[in-house]
Image (cartoon, rainbow, N blue to C red; front, side, top):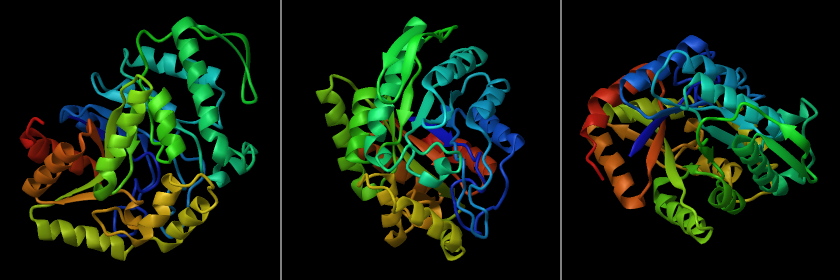
Length: 353
């Protein structure tokens, strides 16, 4: 099973709470996260991309380091770990992104992939006059499918001619080409999103509670099989590893008690505009009522694995064995020591599944 780090390139990482470290993103912090992850034998790092945050007392995601620039810099200070930048599809033409990835592929000696973000937060794009209208909620995976098709054509052949409602390319040239295959990942959670993953992506990041994970994994794998494809499934979790289970619970409860209600209210308000039901936005709204382990909104709706090293090892093995996932993508309240502790006290003792 593979493990990755969800890099904290946005303010405060992935916890909208004053009960967790509150900080601005820096290259130095993200560099140390990537170097520690590589040292501990983790497989990849992934950086997100947000163009507008959610405010509140913690200024949640109000600052965000640009994903491609960050990953190019990290490529230069690492040697083995995989690198996944994120692209908000509405903000960049696919021919530009094709060249950006080809460049990162060269810098990293073939270690990069791409995380595609179809975009549900209208405010991010309205501020730049890039919002295509309310139809985008329902058509965003149609756009994404064309986007990925154009990327793959340019990577495989160096040229592309394409004409549709979304894109027009006239014998467009993008050279150099990547030296190998570029894995595509997506966190599409709605039925439309899962179908897009099954048809066009290589991996899916699953954001769902433990109780729903088994059915979610089966659905993706069944959809992919019908398309004559296979898709790797990576589940997203927060990790809280302390000396004892009680200590871990206290840390998690403190985060919930100090939740940034202003930021969370703004997140839910944006999510409520999304008409594509069953996806990430719907899961965020549901997280208001969920407990910590299932994914409370103080943890951005991301489920939490918590406890002593022994308890965390047990939970990871149970999740893997019950669901059949291929890997996990982790976030921590405090990243560098969290990555180090996972690498030293948890990862070496996870049994082969």
